[in-house]
Amino acid sequence: MSYWDKEKECMPRKELEELQLRRLKETVYRVYAFVPAYKEKMDQAGIKPEDIKTLKDLQKLPFTTKQDLRDNYPFGLFALPMSEVVRIHSSSGTTGKPTVVGYSKKDIDIWSELMARALTSAGATRYSVIQNAYGYGLFTGGLGVHYGAEKIAASVIPSSGGNTKRQIMLMQDFGTTVLTCTPSYALFMHEVMQEMDIEPADLKLKAGIFGAEPWSESMRREIENKLEIDAYDIYGLSEIIGPGVAIECANKQGLHIAEDHFLAETIDPVSEEVLDDGSQGELVITTISKEALPIIRYRTRDLTSLDKNICDCGRTHVRMQKVLGRSDDMVIIRGVNVFPSMVESVLLNIPGVEPHYLLIVDRKGNLDQLEVQVEVSEQLFSDEVRKLEELGAIIAKEMESALGVNAKIRLVEPKSIERSEGKAKRVIDRRNI
Amino acid sequence: MAKQISVFLENKAGRLSHVTRVLGDAGINIRALSIADTSDFGILRIIVNDPARAYRILKDASFTVSETEVIAVQVSDTPGGLAAVLEQMSESNLNIEYLYAFLGTSENDALVVFKVEDIDKACATFKEKGIKFIDEKQLYEL
Image (cartoon, rainbow over all chains, first blue to last red; front, side):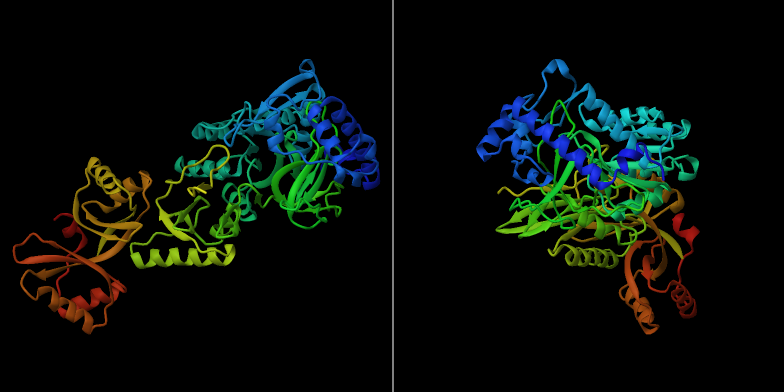
């Protein structure tokens, strides 16, 4: 088992909690003093920085949401003057005004450190050739991974997203050993490899670090079998820092959250009540070392559960279960919560079905309709209508027992569902509610 | 026995014209054709002059395609011609999955393509009953 910073990653819980409390207090003092929006919220809730005496007191603080970042667009939540801000990233703003995040020099150092831990946890070393196919630019994925990869002194190929044939050429010619991108892009790369008649054996790829979208255990198996690599899940979000907030270790039994820099809680997304470890809820994160944009109790919308049991790898940091879905990605169909990742698991358990799918939600009269488009691979295809209809019926039955709602299965031609080079689009909601 | 090419088609404008254009551009000649359709998708079944090449070309064009073994039977082009063949098949318990007919080359015969459950049994039965079925080469060269 190798660590980037064993002392921090395996810090005994008591010591870790002392560090966390000290950092939390500092952070709360700083946001109260320097960020008017936080002061206002805390005043409204009747909380003063000195009320934070234990880690449990964190629960007294108000939540921060994406809307708060939008309301304070662009730099309103920054706790440092712009002269101290060395980097700005932003979301694409597809669901509204973009959210803007800033970093001090020290924030960038911490972020690089976290990514160095993450890459090391996934087995990367200075001898690795890391092909970073996350998009470079305003999106945090590209530069986040890049800085961490340089920190561990690996050789980085900043290939960014897109131009898949060239990606594969680089992979082959430069002897890439570690691939970083979204899991759906990794599978798409495999498809293109097949078209190019390139086998995993022709490559030196050993591991992949995939994130930026929820993906299931079945999808992990699919990627690991097809690319013949170890696939690790990485978690992060720009509002907190970017990729590197949490990473899987070789045990792949949950992602270790870097607890010396972040506090994690899970809450019931509706009642906002804090849940016990082990219960599934929305992940809430507080940054305790960030300077430019400290965030108190950020509602990530990601659904997971926490586990403080010490991992076999020796790391003491709490593990979050692989993200099941996002509370805002979730589609409610006839009152039932459906996550794209659940659909994915069902499909991947049917031999021959490819994990390329699209959920189309519509409303006919007063009834919600769910259509799942599934690509017909050669393995599934039959020249007999009856057999294809039987296949559709099997998928529909499996889907209904797993999701609790019935779905119309529509068989579509291979490669007709749009492939993504970044985050995959899984749901089209045509309901006008 | 002969090879039929089967292609999955989404029920969407332009798909059939796309397949036929791809084949046409590659110089593949379609001898016989039938389409099975449902509300969502269709299956195009064709007999062509060069099935192996047609299969490759369609696959390269990203279609879902398969090769299927079928039998092309010569049926007398007179009233009751097909009935006579079907009755003999029924007597021998040959299950037919689907069939489609096209005009043969001679004035007196039509050709019927059968997809049967058990192709070896069908061939044996046809031989035994004296039903003429034409071989692969002849069919592609029609």
